[in-house]
Image (cartoon, rainbow, N blue to C red):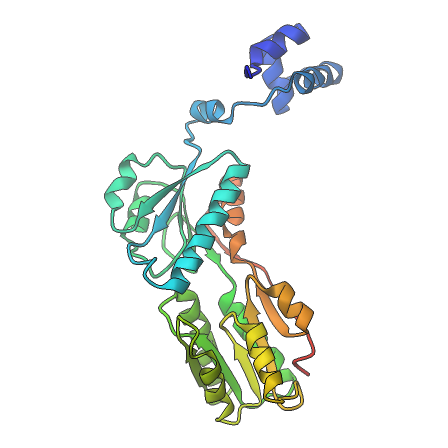
Length: 318
């Protein structure tokens, strides 16, 4: 199929190509009648603006850099997290006509020839040399859960804030001994959540009770019982196995919330937790690329943005 050009629309409408551009971009001093007629002709012919041609004229490359750590695929949980981050960026970019350029964190020298409009740094555990070099080169940078001086949009993924909100909810519901079930990994979101739990416990004079689940999930039930054996009256499951934990507690005749309060965190199984009536915190880390693109389009000054989360009350807390 032959692509409809600006000249084709101009010929059909009987105006100049400059007039077509003004009408479709909301510029110039065209009358309302002429503007609407041009839009109607463009729609009739199926004209779609060439975003890449416009980008070249404005000096934009229509590509976003994504930092990939060399060891990010060795840990199964971390690999899944990185795959979701990349997928979210690809989807958000595709809607705007952007491609994604993947850059290893160990090769900051590739920045010079990367031809990108911005750099997305998804994991604070990665080597930050490439991030600092991007800032020094004047490339806009968006970083998850990381504050770096100069030209960086900090996207707080909400994990720490959600932990504080969940612990406050359990405390308000009467919980005195809150156990924290977390993944045993080096994923920064897990470290962030555990740090928030330990800080909250210290501030509120509570004894921290932590149990860790291995990457293969073989120790999920033993880790849960490790907390139950310490006479906890509430469990905050920071690992994303809320349904499995809920069903196991039912199997061992635990009555929730009478015997034990349960609150879980989730990013992908929020609907399942809701159907089971589990009180849960639903986070949306996949919205980080949308935030980055919005800031890039608006040309805003670097700042910090907190991603949303929801505390959904169910029958597992009082």
